[in-house]
Image 1: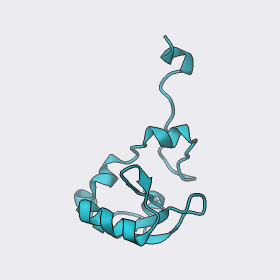
Image 2: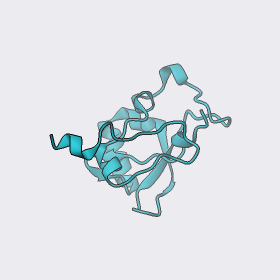
Image 3: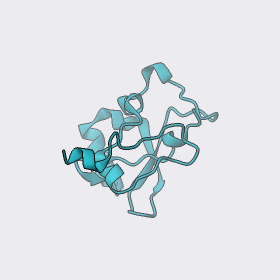
Image 4: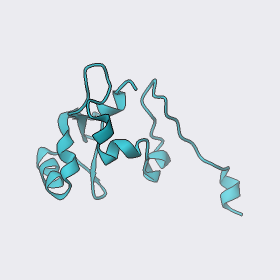
Length: 108
């Protein structure tokens, strides 16, 4: 409930990270839910634009919690590629993720 995850979001358009304002505008035409977010920076690692939710209150809580975006309702949904590339949750985040079984169990 700190709102950190609402401040440093990256989005994909298909399988490509959104890296330009033009890509973002095209993505908003395809998906109206994207209108709830605004560009607030650029990730130094891969050049992806970072977004903040427009419904985030100064105290870090959602102003429209009961009407929040599906993106927020599904959080912390993580693409498998994120885990394979050793992605991490934000420091202090209450959510964690991990594998549900050892690698050798997948080989059985």
